[in-house]
Image (cartoon, rainbow, N blue to C red; front, side, top):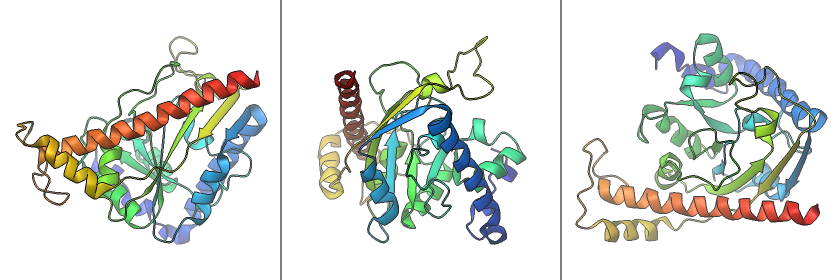
Length: 286
């Protein structure tokens, strides 16, 4: 990524007194509310759990929300449901955003930085530079959202194998975040990838139904998981030589891989359980 397009300075809360960020968050929030509630119909299951954690979780404890990825509009429109404070710049989430989509040029980079987006290079590995920035936000006790599948998938199919970046953030965070899984349906109809001539529509479509199911907070006993990873990785020679060899309380690369795989599998299971529940819940309502 070109150094001039990372624009860390634009992501700071005090940049120009915070006014540009407030303007962008307010405008994007109005757009999300319109798409979610005026153009389409959005229903939310267990939304109070998300609202409670966004507004009044324990001081200094970060929130990490994870969800499936159905379209380029998932964020911010999934936060546009009625009652959600999407126009509050202080409460707004940070989100890992694809560098090749959101940071193509200076103007886009500035806009998405003001919108609290952290650039991530797909294929750049879990220890790439800006993962440290995500860790800094968790250290601050902020709310961070990730799409651990790593890319958009519009098929009505089980949750795919997750990338390990989210698991590494959970394991490496100075304060273990509250992890909240979320599954949604309908965004693939609001912004289909293959609408006309293999392209997305120029504007969001309307008269669609968006359904969002919020799960329950997940707990990770990291000391226990680290011990399990050490035990499982003994004798393993799975080392690429590109990972830091002694972090997370003395875990070598093989143990890190075991740890991240275990955490990712737990998150994937939680997401898949919510997906199965939401599908059966919708059927009983029909």
